[in-house]
Length: 438
Image (cartoon, rainbow, N blue to C red; front, side, top):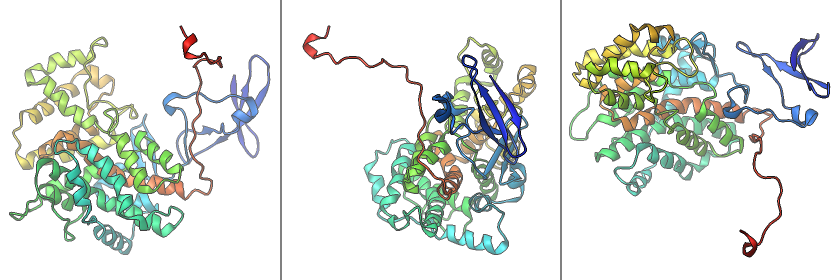
């Protein structure tokens, strides 16, 4: 039994043992917005009990000033600014500055930050040789896990996490170099030469150039595609304490170097339940196959006994609508219109969107298209293979990961993460020699 009380100085939550009648008071902490939390750090010392929360869905693992999500209302904010405003008015690098430093930059600050990131985009030349050790048909995420972790072997002059200047250099290097490595990974898997970054292009233009440019001819960046890429990057920059971000924080709590921590985040993101959702959208479209099959598959999605899932609709966190989806739908329409793409799979996606949004079953349950639905369509239209989708997610999310890591490391109360467990294995038992075992 539990109840909340409040005295003059501190709100508390009273927890009572129904068997013994003993009670303890646990402090309640309030955030700026959102639910309050019950501080259970002294629970074990006071009661001999741990809390049990598989997947940590009811547990606040940290304090953070970066990102706030209200899934019921469809709100996503970075440092107090809504994602809609940031996507409308800011560039990806401006959002990166906001996440790293807490406020939107002045003109002078933005000029310096842009310069610092731009002049870190080159990678050590010997990294080129690392790629030769991977099979050409290796999954791009497998390459990224290895190559990002290897950065610590090349940039060991910025690994002291206790030095603020080295932390900042590492943050800039990761934001700048991971797009270069992602583009190199793509080029490697298709057998094309690596393209060095260009300092005269902005972040998203440069990334598209490194992915699709060729030494044999000039490459002109399509501004509509660059704008859409920038929007995708902004919308995926950070998303509170998701699986990959929590992985980065847990790795960082051991005082591991930032390159290793970001590599761990990439490994976590690789899981199809996390970063592979936009790839799953395209695979679902392949399964549907043709526009005439859409009604049949929508009925399958409504059937609880059918394993078919309508990928790209609804969201685990957003119970109303995904605030990122509206922004990306506009960019999606612009890209498809500009490219004049006549791809049966993309046409199928647009028809699926139209029919689902007219179906009362999906409308009543607020199963609207989410950010993964539109990002998958845009990336396919740009020419990226589905195997690269999660890599592009990692390029954007690096900003959030390194901002979360930096925030955590700068906390004076930093301690290594150590979740506990409910042990359900055998109790202590005697050892039996092999010759006496049955």
